Image (cartoon, rainbow, N blue to C red):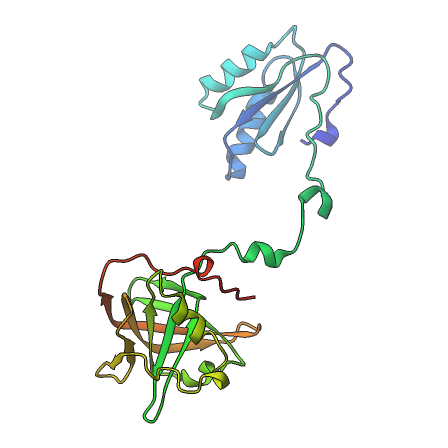
Length: 263
């Protein structure tokens, strides 16, 4: 039975009572409830509307309280505050459906402005080759697995550093102190303007050959496990953490505090 077959005119002394029930995933249970309600004296029509049981009945033969008592006595899972519409002799008011709002109603502006509100840290990515070292400032980094510990780093496909990360190779993520804005600014410059990235920057290599900055308050050394091309202008590099640690307790630099803008 459906709302389309119900008499919603409210004439002839009939009333419609709408009761809230817990969502029923089992069609058989829903059918049992409908059949039970329909057998009550004075009930003309019953139907389900989402989580609501709608009962059209003659209040002189079956009151709202009588319907509730009969259903509860048979274990029907009525929700707290089950009565959604009283027996007024009028059909229950229609529930408005979803409406489409325009940009003005939503306060819509530039989505890029909202994206800049996502919090990011500022890190130095360092990669060591046999003949050269490379380092650059990065921020699009997140952990994606506990076991094994995995990170995902997003790099611009046109950047010099993009070509230095190879499957099975290693890289390090160096965490900067909040006050070390100058290092982040310098390594954010294009590689052509600073070809000797780590010249004059104290660092040491791990036994895997990865350069680790001495000034890093913490670091993570990773091996490249996979790369993904999601279809945009950045490549996703999945790195498994193979070494790392916190060297000293200090507040780390964030993108907002650095004054850098990446967009």
